[in-house]
Length: 239
Image 1 (cartoon, helix red, strand yellow):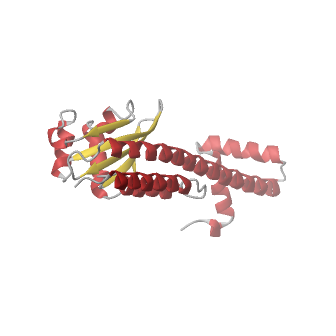
Image 2 (cartoon, rainbow, N blue to C red):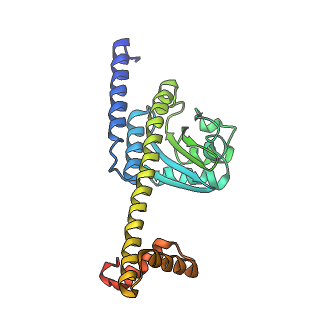
Image 3 (cartoon, rainbow, N blue to C red):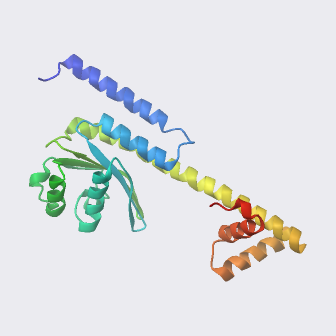
């Protein structure tokens, strides 16, 4: 039975409010990357009609990674696309905002992958580009156990959600890199202070010594610094 116009309007209003709430929740700068990815998938399954399972995958300088999934089957299907070099992730999402297969049982673009997806119980899929540049790609891939699940309304919701998700992912990544940078700077400062005190050197000389050790050991500067600090304070080590 088809919903009445009033019911359809109420549904669209509810979806819009949920998307707005989702966007606001992702502004939490204290949310880690895993928490951000988990929230994106949770809301995608909740808001996009027909979606039953899914994953988020990235390609960074050739490194292909399934960074989050709703379950092991979704993760396996995403990995299969890379292994077979078939499916929307390796072939189309970099160039298209959205890729939809309405019927995987008759999908001619990726015959091997489509057959395996059908064997796993799925009948349609949609893939949304989150971001794309020369070295970096992010995609949200959703699967459904219903043929023709991802219609125009579902795609429109998915595109809106993906736009918010992309901003949140890039922001979470920047925040993690910033926190990592602060931690590295702090540990280098501790190591410099130890060297200055132990060898009666000034700050520049202590840093030069750290840099020389880094070069000799072929290790990042912050790693050398952490090794020195941990060696001086064994209780700081993590077991």
